[in-house]
Image (cartoon, rainbow, N blue to C red; front, side):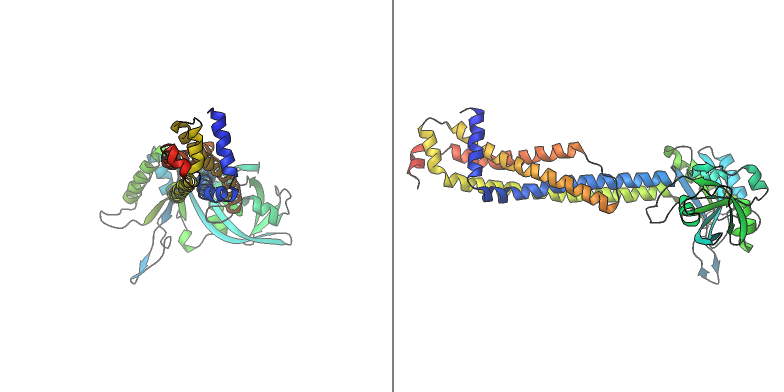
Length: 410
């Protein structure tokens, strides 16, 4: 027989019982669809976390104030102010692996413009803070050293403030009140979107650090040089761990913390936290893909079962083919082709469902769709291999039938 004849005979055999063929391929369909969907969703989740890390600022460390203890009662993180502007200057000057050390304070308050008001997050920050966190001033200008020295009443606002307070119109040059203190808007930042924790990064107002401490967010605890936090930007991603260790050592020395004593500050590595989250999501996706691979094997067992039944049902047909000159090799190839065709049909349908499921899941989760061609090729090759592996034994059994005994079979 020619290869085309084998293929035609295999297809005719599968078409003879469409329902059984469909049920047999169901396990392969589910397995292939799940593999493609899980790999795509996992890659999309990882890309989403990478984008968030980039939006928060690359190579970022955040130094926070420590906790206080009074009468045996320990306060939470930030309850004890220990970080100063001098600490930030020392970190930037003395540690080569740190490119920027930006002190800042953070609070909330009402922003008022005309008859409109909006409750938002307020940052007292330096130009270095905007650079470290990769805030781009899209319209207007950023702060200058003169603004900081004079404690100027100028503000930079995010896109959400523009939409909710100014109705989408340009706010440059407009006067607003922040906690009843008048400010002039000098800049608007480019859109950054949400953090992985759901907060809006564009719902923010920046004012010079000195202005925030003296007029807006100041208080007894922020008098003098104390700040709420220090944002560090490492010179590269490879040096971020080194920067963290050196910053810790320098701050302990500056704060005169003896060996064995607790730190009066906390250093957080945003990238490592989010990377760990991405790794867990990716691990889960691969775990689900492995479960889907088990489904493919179960589907292969179903194919073997059906092919064995088919051999039994078609014993007389096999004997007739052998009687008219078909060799055992021809019978074996025909049954292997049938098994592979079953697997590939299921694989192709599974690819279509998997791609559709990936698109749906990406839209529902708000993740970018990362569709990998290799996952499709791998799934199809694996499904074909399942057909060959589980179809070989039934095909071998069919090829070894005795023609005379097969013709006598009812």
